Amino acid sequence: MQTLKSALIALALTCAAPAIAAAQSVDEEEIVVTGQRVREMVRAFVQEVAPPEMSEEQMARWNSRYCPLMAGIPARQAQYLVDRMSQRAHELGLRPGDENCQANVLVFVTPDADVLAQALAGDHDLVAYYNNAEYGNTLGRDALAEFVASDAPVRWWHVAQTVDSQGQILDNDGDVTRAQASRLYRATRQDFNRVLVIVDARQAAGLNFEALGDYLAMVTLAQLDARANASAVPSILNLFSERAINGGASARLTDWDQAYLRGLYDAPRHAPNTDAQERAIAREMEDTLSAPAQ
Image (cartoon, rainbow, N blue to C red; front, side, top):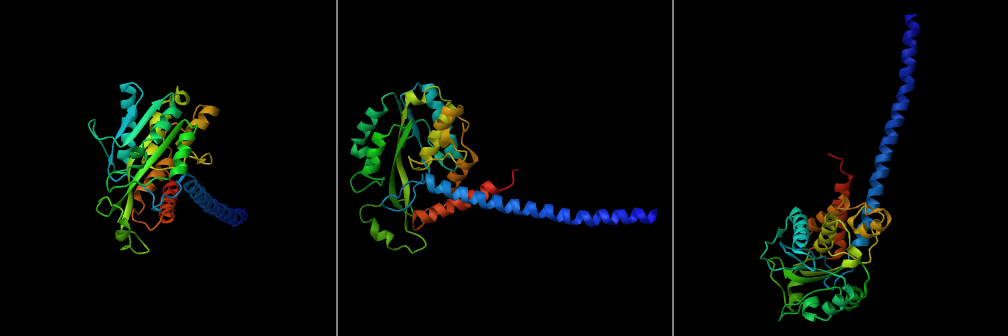
C-alpha cells in the first residue's frame, strides 16, 4: 500500500512538472506580448501628439519659470485653475511664478472664441514675438490660420525662442553658434517664450475645473498637435470627446499624460532633431508604463 501511495505521488509530480513549466512559459509569453504592445502604443501615441516640426527642428519646453494668467472668469475660479496648472508644472521641476510674476501662459475664456482668435492672430508681436534682434519660432502661417479657423473647445498657440546652452537668446546669427555642434547634439535648444490659449466658454460650460486645469496644463507644458487623436490610450486629451460619451472618463492627467510630460522634460534638450527627442520620450514612457505597480 505504501509502495502504491509513493507511486501515485511520483506520478502526480511527474504530471505537474510539465503543467507548471507550461504555465511559466505562458506567463513569460504574456509579459513579452504585453511589453511589445506597450512599446507599439507608446510610439504611436508620441508620433500622434508630437507637434509638426518648427523651422529649428527641435521640440520646445519651458526652461524654468511658468506663470499662467487667466482672463474671462471670476477670480476665484481663475485662481483655482492657475494653482492646478502650477502644481503640474512644479511636478516637472519648473518654477511656477507668484501672483506678481510676468505672465507667459495667457489663457482666455470667452464665448466669442472665433473673434478673439482673429484678434490675437492680427497681433504680430504677440503671436510671432519679434522684438528687436530677438525672434520667435512658431509653426508658421498655415498653422496660425488653423488656429483661427478651429472650432475646438480649446485651441493653443506656442512661441519658442532659440537659446544657447546658457539660456542666452540668439539673434539672426544663431546659425553660427549652431554650426559648432556635432551630429549628436546641437549648441542650441528651444525654450518656450509664451503660450496663448483660448477656451470656448460655451463648449467648456459645466466642465469639472480639476479636469479643465489638467487639460490646460497638458497643452501648455508641452506643444501638442492640435489635430491629434489620442483615443487609443487613456489621456486627458480625450476629455471633450469622452465627455460627450460618458461624462469624461479621463478627468485628470493620466499615467500616459504624465509619462509623456516627464519624458519631454527629461529628454536631451540639445538633441540634433525632433526624432531624437521623440525616441527619448518614447523610451522613458515605455519604462514608466511597463514598471510594476507599487
